[in-house]
Image 1 (cartoon, rainbow, N blue to C red):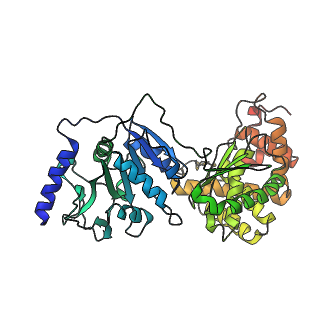
Image 2 (image 1 turned 135 degrees about the horizontal axis):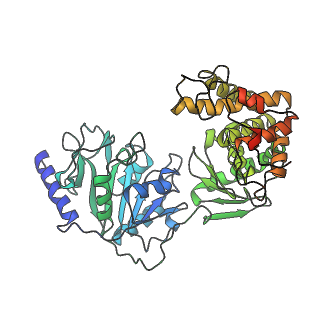
Image 3 (image 1 turned 30 degrees about the horizontal axis):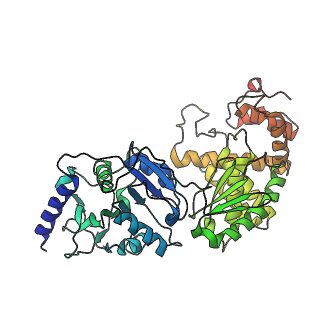
Length: 476
């Protein structure tokens, strides 16, 4: 098929997909998190592109997810260390045969998403030529984002084009599979603007996703629920924690349990107090090398963090970091992120990785000194303490927030090596929800003063903190 005819066919096919009335029905979308966990997939994609339609997440093996009351399946990514199993492919195929819509986002011709798309006849290759063009039926002036891949031409089974490159090759498109529709698109076509202000391509991607789902009936009166991290394929109850993980992550479960349990007593020694009852008692494994979370009771851990299981030093820091977020409750710390990683560095020292831990501490302080050599020009938020000095923003503010926090802790640790344990013992004793409503910097400095056995308010004011002993509402 010649280039011009191919584009004309694509436009006509697109018009058929949208229909003449432009109406769409309700969407019940499932977003897969089990092959690759990202915070973007955990709700943000749905908010950006699915609007008021219902969307849930699948945190566990896709083939175990009940798609009977869903009509759209979103597959954003698959970690290079995983793959879509035969059971996954069969489950996706059945969903398409029943009329469901599936969208596969692909980042490169060799990624796992490309391997999956190939099983449904979508073969991506490099060589897309900018600029990208939306077909007229989409009624948009510009295609946002980047794409260097294009679909290999298939004249026997052509694609309905949504986006083509400068030479007319299909970059994002759709075709019928069974009673349903499969859409493939470059991963760079979905997401946020660099400033996270707006989702890119929402003007055309959102209505296309709606149309993709229209081949399968759903029942809004029936339950449509996600399968969360604790609705796991595998749940192991141990003395100190319950471990949750998917079929895909079974090969990593033993090592993750071992490092978590081995690290815990070292954390408790550095924190000076045991975990509050129930806190950190559930550990869920995430299919990612970056990103975790702590929800108090539930901690989510990235199974490949820092090259684990081949390397353990960064995983020790990471497990400690997420654990400390639960340990400090019911009141988070004013330096919540830095203190969690700093304690992780201390635990690294205790567990035999002292040289690397000390290097990380020193490097963090060094980054702050580039902006604040004497540690007295800015507060933790990067606000200037002096007239005529502009506040810091972005990475510079973050460098000071972390580095200044580390520097303060290091100054206190030189004077009292176990100051952190004493501090948290005092916090657990005096900072109780029935005694105070908010844990402020004033309260923090008061407790640190008790820890060190002297008044620290003058020192903190000297290094740029707006603190006042008169505002302390903790009663000793």
